[in-house]
Amino acid sequence: MARLLRRLLVLALFGAALAAAVRALQAKRAVAPAPDAGPSWPPLTPVEADGAAAAEVEEVVTEVAADVESSAETRAESSAEGTAAWVEPVGGGCPDGYPVKASHSGIFHVEGGAFYERTVPERCYLDPQAAEADGYRPARR
Image (cartoon, rainbow, N blue to C red; front, side):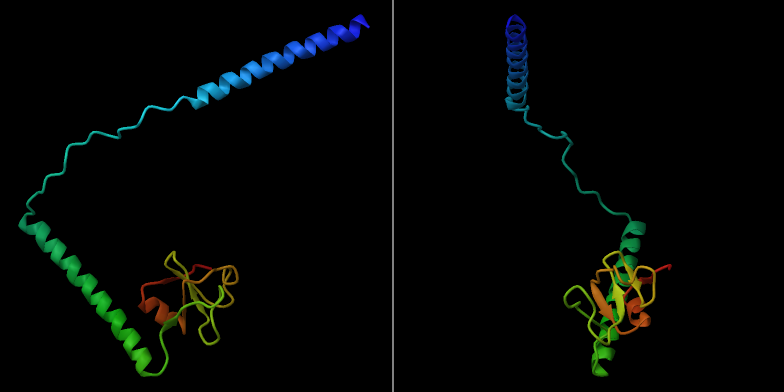
């Protein structure tokens, strides 16, 4: 009987210590952290671009405009032929006639490729040439 009472006393002490530790952890977590003001960076000031930088920016803008125009021409040619160069995927896969899967990573996959089956397409193309014309690269496997 005395042995049972000692065990109950030890269990009660252990339980009380455990409860106190849990309350201490909860109290520690309840303290709101100091608001983070973030870095104190100086405000941005506009800088005048020199002639070389302005010319480089103009060159990049011209290249991008040419790429956009090229893509638009490719789609226009395809639609003039009666078919679009690419279509939206349907139900997580490509519809019939559009077997090339292009993903958000900038890579396209063709049937029989290592990752074709598990690729979730962003666009579906008629052929690899159409995907490359839109800036996608072929998968390596």
